[in-house]
Amino acid sequence: MSDEELDLVDRLADQHDGSRSDAIRAAIRSGAREQLVRVALEKYRHGEVGMRGAADIAGLTVAEMMAEANERGVLSNYDETDLESDVENLL
Image (cartoon, one colour):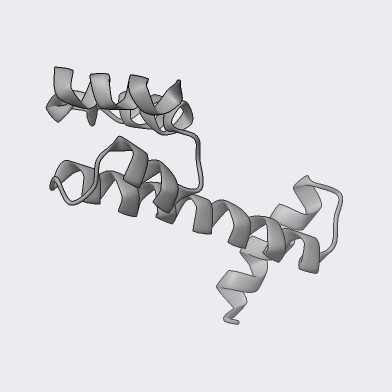
């Protein structure tokens, strides 16, 4: 790791009163989770997957994925057919 990266990790560890190892694990979890959500939403935007598929990619429930999509302004192509399908799958 570069000095800059080690500094970031050390600052994160200090903020959480933990070790470098703890900080690295937390950063990887957070970063990986964020990247999976981004990939899932990008595939959803391009029509490669539906909301359920996006949720599966991200490791979230459909409701959680919908909340992420809504927060990020991605639900513009979510239509009535998608809604009906998602409701049926939830039941």
